[in-house]
Length: 345
Image (cartoon, rainbow, N blue to C red):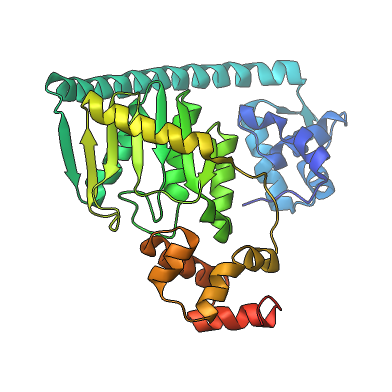
């Protein structure tokens, strides 16, 4: 492959504007150099852009085939005026664009047709309650929510990964799904746990969703993952302790009203997502000093949970997340780290 010499970014931008016509950076620069000379040879112009004689000949042959260069009676080369030379290239590019636009329209129509077929099958006999067992079925249903929600999605994101997510410590997939839903124009409101600040990846994901239009607030505790979709149905994790178990979907008005009421109660008392900051390890450790102090006193998980107003499983997950963030494998090592930072006696 022929590589162009390094150029300043601003200069390079101008020289690659012909990329839409099928010219690479080297070919664009080669042609530009010819435009500044009445006639020249491929070797001479190639040398000025750092090409070997063989490379220059290959580029010149390409430009000759496109009609950008022409031969002279003296055996040299000259540049054809860009308005004349590029007109056929522009026409071909417009034809390619028209074909691509047509293919895109056909593809969009096919997607709409497939979605309508699926929707017709499910609307024909909507069940008041459905159980989608297993991780694959759960994740497929979350994808369906993202693809079909028309007005609103309200979500309570409890401790642990969303239903169906394979890697429990990776929240990228669910963040992307929420952002996609918001970009479609659906009003998405998301309640997250305050403890997301333990892992920077969770905080980054939250701000990515917020940038896409997702409204986010945080609360101390949430019992289970819940999705309220278009005020028509509620989807909840089948088992709060096992995100691989599946999803339960309920369409009865009473269940939807109860879930919506629970969401709004949490939402009213929730705190807005904090602006992006750059917490130092000491800041993070200080924020969870009470938890670490309880670990230092060898308080049992159940007592820690009561003290902090958490469920035992949430308390254990928070401890696990702190250990992962500070790259320690045991609670004792976490306490030692806090002591060394001067946060504990």
